[in-house]
Image (cartoon, rainbow, N blue to C red; front, side, top):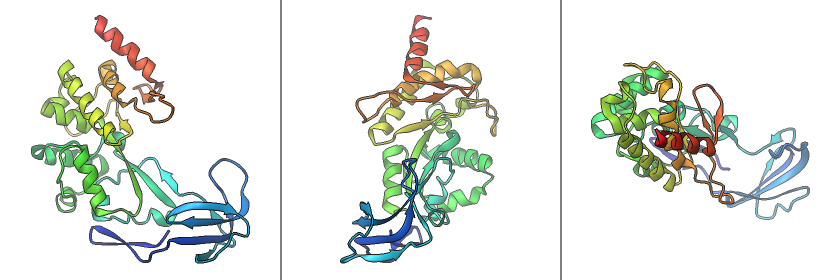
Length: 275
């Protein structure tokens, strides 16, 4: 809850607030229910109590009269992957109430990447996002190859927001197939390698994969062609990891905008095996 400011690549908190009472605001709790007048008590960075007339003993009191109090917003579509390394506070997202950002969207990302392919990955990202190539060279440390080391590099620097990474399908293909990613469909062995990378990331607490299954024209051609749909969907089975009740389903968009679940993925894989 304390103000954050970026200094270099680090995020430093301006004060240590272990107990904070947000008093007199109108609470929108995100449940879909009506707003209500209430106080919010935060203890050690977590919401401890919501109600009226809460005890302010030992707490810093923030007057929220005339304001709305709500959970942090989640921005589900960003391309902040590179800028988080040179703007750790993620300015101005927190000032707008955003506390969580999804990165790795649109099949783009910074991981996985081989050391000899950093330039290719950078060019792809810069082309799509219209960013100067020099920014990538100066602002990103590139101390990783696969997801676990990338996650550690993000955590070491500290961020002003929560970052939830997706694993981009384009960079997965480039990592496994090299230049051939632009020219042809993946072989069975290559699809297995992609699946293994996804599984590794899921085991390291990655939840979702971003698969661009359309017909995107990039720098040198088409990374994923529509006719590859059934060859691409099957490896996404490895993403069906869910901690809630053992439910192992995952929703995957196909090239026509419909939504697959894992049952559909299994049907596709079974049909492929019968061929």
